[in-house]
Amino acid sequence: MSNESRPTSLLPHRAPFLFLEKIVALDPGKSAQALHYVAEGSDNEVFPEVLVIEALAQTGACALLAQKELRQKTAYFGGIKQASFKGQVVSGDILELSVTLIKCKQNIGLGKGIAKVNGQVVCQAELTFILG
Image (cartoon, rainbow, N blue to C red; front, side, top):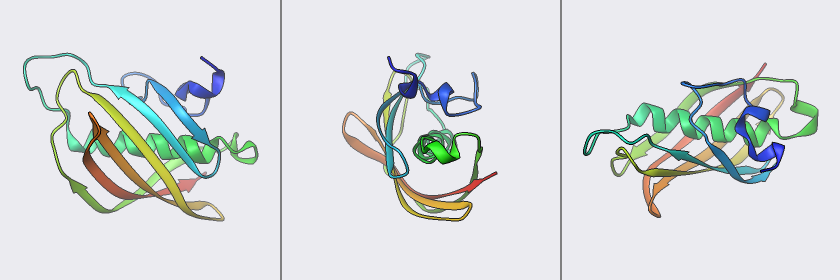
């Protein structure tokens, strides 16, 4: 696993607040795809929607911070627009996360995030990132 495929090489987050195990595709400044393995628990234990959004935000932050000129910055979660939830995420699921950056201007970025389980969309949202 290359250093760039490790979320901890780009993000300050650590367990239990890191929701990415692996970056599977990265186009610095444009997009990122990552995986989160939802911990095994009791049958149908639900992974909260707010944590799906946080996992998407961390994926988008990786896309931003992978740019060499931004490596020393921190990406903060600035907001959510048009979030929709289309299914549940439960224990044992593999959350497939994808964020495409739509616009970056000065210290603010906007991205479109999609979360899937078994290829089925469970969440879509527009996310705002603030660089500090």
